[in-house]
Image (cartoon, rainbow, N blue to C red; front, side, top):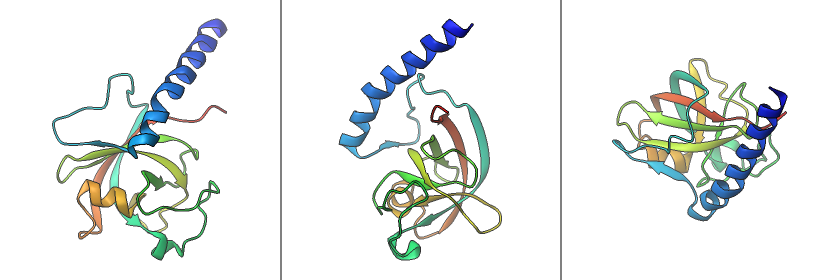
Length: 145
């Protein structure tokens, strides 16, 4: 069992080395309705709730909880409890658009909301003007402890 766990960890590390540089080059994974993230990224857990967005202006340009500077265009988000560095797929339930983002900050701090995404992600998911939408948040990966 311990050997299997070690092999799984090695396989995930190799997949990360292969997949994440391509993510950085393209900026993000935007998934339109009727398309899918590869099956190699099954959800570990799912949350349903409301999402909002934040930006450099609303965050006053400060560093995020992870130490990274907030970028309006980056595929990043804030979550209250997920480990920093977690990878999640956020799906706008109103239009079916989805994007894979990395948790780099803490929040949201307004009741009833489960995730804050960068304004760039909100634009790509089609809800900047609305401000708040129902979403599904699927945890794809969490950092090793």
